[in-house]
Image (cartoon, rainbow, N blue to C red; front, side, top):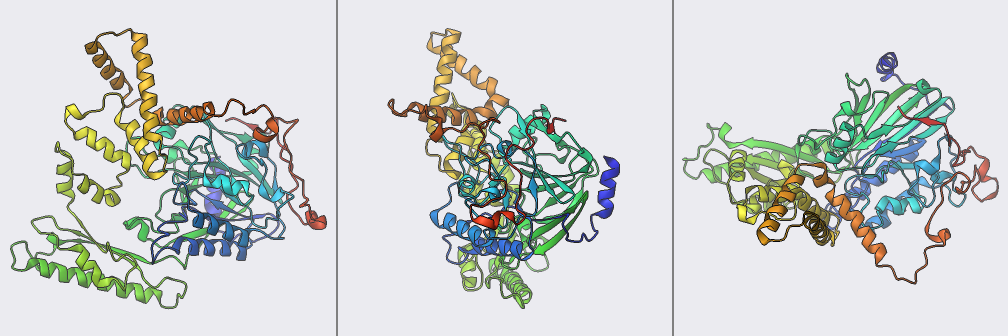
Length: 597
């Protein structure tokens, strides 16, 4: 294994000739379709860039597109967003171009959650020229009683292949999609977004298993797509690269928005990691200011080459930090009219960024005219903030974000304020974009600093925080109510088992019951349990006279003898089936083709 990885290192910059043995894969992550779609200036940005990505895939004549999650920004995208996405996929990914690779694995396993458990280009009712394989991200993950997401809609329509979905909260078994083009064999692994704390714990407890082909293991190129925190946000709120198996050759890392697309070698695990980043800036932070790229990955045998492709339709973004205390020669807090001088200095900084943006945009007609500009001003040391709204209005015709050109920060004072008993939620929210705070962080921070009399009795802060996030981010209107009802019933059962009777004993037992869950796996899994609880409740609410016994309409048997196999090559249109389309059935590879490691 070490020798093979060293060979991969030597050859990674080698130019691979496009031939019948070469996989050409367009790689992109975090497209966030629909982000700010109601904004008058930036509303079309995500759709324009997605058009560029798909157009590039068609021009480069790639074998398939690999997306690393967060295709959509909202868990429940708008009708306009879905309409635009479907229109673009139909425009660029459907056609008569032959597919030149085969699927060797058991597709009923790879796409087990789909009503059509086979790769879309083998469907006789549609013509696919560029298959799209995608895992889901944390923005477009499955939710609700049916556990569906927007990718499932596209999958049911035959436009993408949604893979890497795990339905178990106890153990994950990742079965690869095995592809072959000529002599090159590619094992495509993927895992959709899972709460980082839970996935971290599952890796630690050896509850994540990656299957490998039993035969010719050293001949397969192993490509893994993951959508999790890569940088450390807490003790367990990320996935260390060392958790991943060392037989992998390349890891495509989604979720992180900074573009670090050039493959970087992990010297401990001896695989490479590429982080394509997002194709749109969803926050005005330094990581989003890097030039946005997608990658054209070529794989031939065990060799690879990554070509960086800049995205020309992405709106420019410039950000600078200004620490007022570092300019004592220009102004000091006790100087007369210091605010006016600071404001004039800030205006010079913004105008300089606008001039730089205009110079870079010359010769790039696809780049939007108005850039994103952010000036972060640290006014610690006795300075005062001036009116940011009035300041930003000076650039309303020049920038795409006229409401938040300037942002004032006082990091030291913020940290001191968090330690006080009274939490300033306005301050917390204003820091959310720069400090990475989430909804559940705000809930935990509140109960961490609130008076003892304000503490929750039945619920834990983490469970409540995640329920609030479900309510806010994913419009799960019943998330909080169901959590309370679920926890109430669970606590009642506990009290009955303990046989407590007096009011004092009940209060003491409730507090003890709550404290035993804090910081444990039980606390982290409560929201998932509530989702299952909600799903059972929905099933219980079905009319008594509704007969679900006829499995032809509501269930799917994926046993070997009854799995609906896709047509080997045909498209239902005469001679079109004989043009090199994939010839493998959904059952191929069943039995002893994969093994655990």
